[in-house]
Image (cartoon, rainbow, N blue to C red; front, top):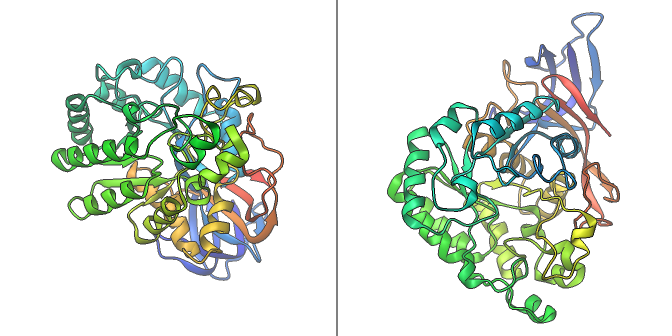
Length: 422
């Protein structure tokens, strides 16, 4: 048994907000009340005085690179990065090698996830080999344990195939997530077409690459009733398209990354390949509209798109280096620093975006604190200032190294076990 005393508890889903003690027994929350006493001699007590007690965070967009690319990250090191950042549940993307388009690879990933001490779920692919031509056996993969579908990393260009995929996902009551970048509008990916592309002397990625595909997929979602997630939204026009679509259908969802609500294309100029990602960092007006979307509920999730790469890969020229940055270890602090301290969101709203809403989209028993619910929770020092310098991830490809951030995870508890201590 575990007793967490004297913490200030916030849970958006259950409505708890105040000083409460939490008694954990057998991986579940047994009681939430004021002034709980230690029930037995061998019950461990954690004094959370001065700390915020919150649901374990849920990230529905991470790349742990296993199988196939374990020089970048693996499921063990990815999970270690997750718990350091306060995440007790993650959903893996399926662009591995082999891809998660078959039961054998899916079962391998889930088995490896069970060894980590946290909840590691995975999406399956939408198309075989991520080639965009033939749908995977989606029903079979759902029965084998996939929690959603995506070809993240590659856009789906065939409209009829996307319609069929949405119909199948809707029949399974499972989300389908989209990487919205039309290659027709991209000369060199990862860098915004504008000031940044001019600086590097390249063509870059136009905002139309995202806008055109978001427009198409919102139309198809409203037509089919599928629950869709517009991944890592980057353009102000895309946010407005989602806003209007949400007025017509309740199954429209969108996610924003910490880097897209914090940085602009100026960061690509300053940090080079460490700030190269797909879709790229855009302009200040886009960043502000993403924040506005988080505030008004148009964008209902924050997801890291944790994308580890080796230092050797990121040392290549900007046109050759891979896109993406790591994000699990800095996401919560960036949310507190940029959004809560910035006056845009309350802590409760931030937790909704980082725990409750992502869990709800994927139908996960996670992202909340309640009696009888899972004992997945984090203790946060919301006032602690720190500087990211070393990472437990295998990778360190991020522009946020050396930044002064606020808000630090002190303990991460999953299924009643302390899986991380600062």
